[in-house]
Image (cartoon, rainbow, N blue to C red; front, side):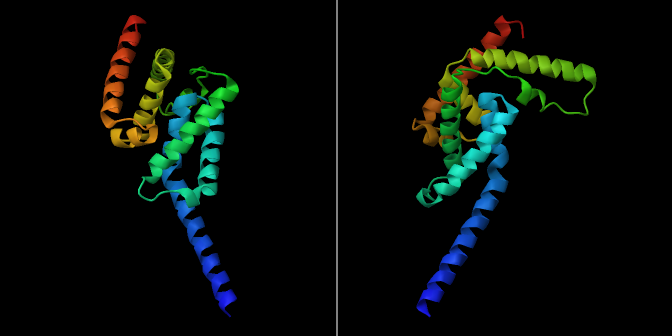
Length: 182
């Protein structure tokens, strides 16, 4: 009788974990995908890596610390997945344009699409000239809307360091784009 109750409790807990993980997936998939897509600029690989992030999250769920924001924890997993991906591909910066071009609204006029595509290309070229840390922090800030505190927690740096890096990286990005005539 006690064994049956223990088994039932375990079954209920597993079902609750599955429901919780499904809810987390629904809530955070877009931000995780955006972060990865912004970092590697490849739509197809970004989908694969986003799926990998949630697979890793499921296998490591028992080690999750509830005092840490779920999204920040997932971004930390995504950061590691991107690092592994870039090492495997031996790529250091953005190359493909597929991911960003697909984000262009289908309701725009052809002229607007052409201008937007050119702006994306210029941004990618300029981003490639930033340091990896700067690209990473800007990706976390603008692709996932993480707050400076959350980025600092993920990277293990101070919040003021994140603020300064964002400010300097944006200033540097603006200067690069101006020099390139963008």
